[in-house]
Length: 372
Image (tube, rainbow, N blue to C red; front, top):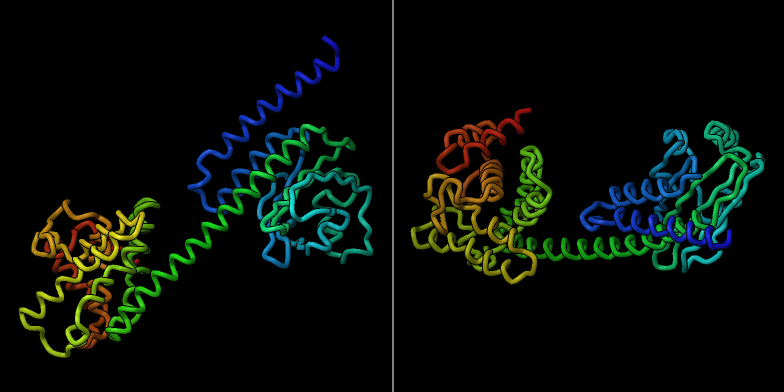
């Protein structure tokens, strides 16, 4: 076998190992936040280019590129450097914003006249004032450079073709997943707009509930986080809490705003709203968790609630969270039939209803959280 064949075989073997590492780095990223996604992929890429001594990841806010991750650099110093796409690093160039390429740049010495005195000091402190070689690749979204992966070495050598290929693969994959995440973000925004419109439709019917849904949502999320519920539970509570009363769309407005006490028949009608909520929400895909939480928000721990008369652990803990905060906000808000009570009185009632209307553990955590 010739020397060239040996080198080719070694390169192929190394790239196969790199591909496997790349695949492993991208496993499960659909469940990560954008920040966690960037962190995982940046460090994985850095580890696959052993000649890189330092590295950084810049993200654009649409105007300026700012460092969000680094390895080998003092991040507090690095954060002092901001660049526009036109002045990015002075000497770095992106020749085509529609596709990912890898570029290599050797810096002999910065031109002091292009920077202010502090920037020059920062470059010197970081070790990127003179004599280093960088490879970098843009992160592309909708034909725009939205980020930049950079890796530096200080031994005077150039990067190998395999290192450049690895960086290109990573930058392409990050660009694709970045685009996917941005689309998901747009979907989440549209989703929140739909939810807001649904909530507004209730508030049009009942001015006294204006802001109630959002307050319940904020309280429920805060309590759920204090209770260390998992991410999936918190997401479901987030949506269920803001939509828990959506079924009131099916209740006549005069009953919702009636200033006096409701008759038995009127109260029975109002009690139908969890069933109406269920009918509305169960027609929305991926809402199975949300439906049951909203449906159960008037179930009481002792079994005296409605609509199913569930008790104890039959009631979802997420629903028990919404039940407590819903009652607390109702008591501390002006209603058509009474003025708001003060917080201490509401806390006292919640304590009294511990183990009756409310789940005892949720009451304990709620009161501890509110009285920190």
